[in-house]
Length: 300
Image 1 (cartoon, rainbow, N blue to C red):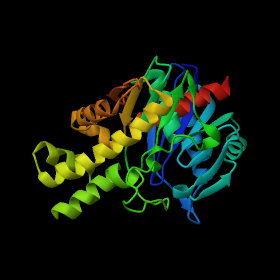
Image 2 (cartoon, helix red, strand yellow; image 1 turned 180 degrees about the horizontal axis):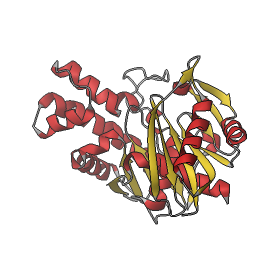
Image 3 (cartoon, helix red, strand yellow; image 1 turned 120 degrees about the horizontal axis):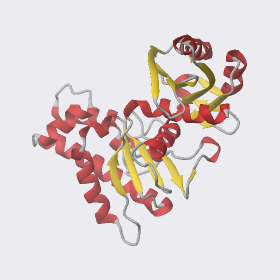
Image 4 (tube, helix red, strand yellow; image 1 turned 120 degrees about the vertical axis):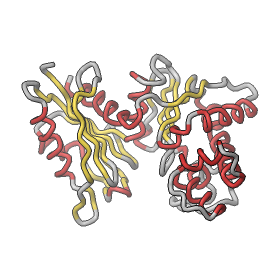
């Protein structure tokens, strides 16, 4: 390999970075605690990580970089419109990193870049209409429609803020009853702890309690499944994905999640095309692989 790209997946607590080959093989990875300056994630750290990856590349040349970040990310203009968890607003991130690193740079939304990876080399490879939905602390989605990724200037894919329980809890966005207030991994763990009095902090532990027949866990889980099925019915009706790849921490529960979700979705279908529900294939490498794809495009 004489050419590689740097891929940076920025999170609020840690940043994952990788060298990615042209065949999208991940050559080397780093995970680093996120550094903040005056409350905002330090853009200089991204440039430092690119330099570290260049040092790790040996005789290969790093020819471009891709950066994935959460929030409202305008990929076309390369601007982080509103990345609240990172402390960024209207930040021309692509240009800042490109100028400092001396490389062509692409900027992408973390979930949409993860979806790009799943659509290209992951669980939804080869489909023209697909959906990737990681379920973690938050919930968002990436869509492929007739072979084109939906972006809408960074505003597409916020499925976690579809209202599924109008009388429910107030979401962090200010709306009442969003999907995230019913089915995010954080909500599932917190709600089960409230009902059971057990100090559970991970949704996968709730999934294990579901398998064991714990009635509190079953109640919380069923509510989450119902909310997810309602939101997915809307997505299927509007965009008709052939495959829905479920990722994020909640996907670790496997068929404890997918089997009842599939059954609930089947029960809601009328004329719609029933999608195939699968577990996402790339795990926490998806963001870096997707950022790598964008980097290769920028470098070409």
